[in-house]
Amino acid sequence: MKIMEERICPLIHLNCPTDINCQQCINIPQSPAIIELKSAVFQTLAEVPNDDYEFKDIIRNDHKIIPHLTHPLIQFASQSQFNKKTDSIQEQHDQQQTESSSSISLVTSSLNFLENLISNDNICKVVINTPKALHSLCTLTCYKINIHFSQENDQQTFAVRHSSRGCLWDIQQYGDGSTHSELVNARYVRVLVIAISTASGSGEEQDEEIIDGLDNISWFLKYLHQGYYSFPPQPLLVRRSVEQIEEEGGNEEIDSQQSNKGKGKNIDIKYEANRAKDEILNCFIEQGNPRPNWYYY
Image (cartoon, rainbow, N blue to C red):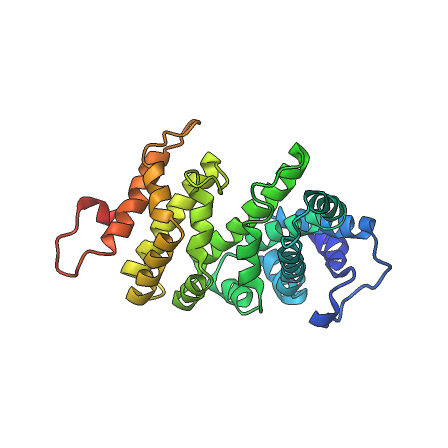
């Protein structure tokens, strides 16, 4: 780890964004090769074991890593939203080629590194309090969804969407009550509904994404409804979340998954769909009414 700390960590600061005022910035002429190098640095650091807390503390405190990771995500999400306004398939294809050669790998490695770092509420707070960061993560979960140019391109764009969802799921897992409030404000349940969507034809339609999405719907509503170790029940947030699920067509999508047997080993989509449905119904149970057995999962 000493070699990594001395030789790899400084490369985090290749051409740091000017607006974060990094004192360790290494300014050199920008090029696709430099972007690829920085991407490789982020990906290498993303693979540091989750339990190496000392090294992660160095990364967070000595290198102020979070703004270095969120900046390219915010910039990329903003540009992708702008590019969606074009009606030309050829223009989209040309733009994709440009993105693929210059920035998608950096965005994906930034997401992977960020996901690896989100392991407590303090990190969640830093991300949440970074302007546009949460909105950008939500935006990137839909990046180029249902737009297909080639198998390689599909794999690259799916990696962006998958890792963006991973960051949000970790924020959900480790965040406190105020973090959950911000997730509701950002319409986080829309991310979950898209992950499980098959009936509408607008989702990933991949079994592992569906299972994770259903599982996170269940836990998100459960924590809001019952409270979690760091916050009490949040009835207003529960109501808003259930309303958002309904507005996004989530009830119909969950219903459709209740008959989905999945295609792989150890995949039980039907079970997870029933859990999610039960948790939504459970939110309507008035206090004092008997709880069914599945309430105590």
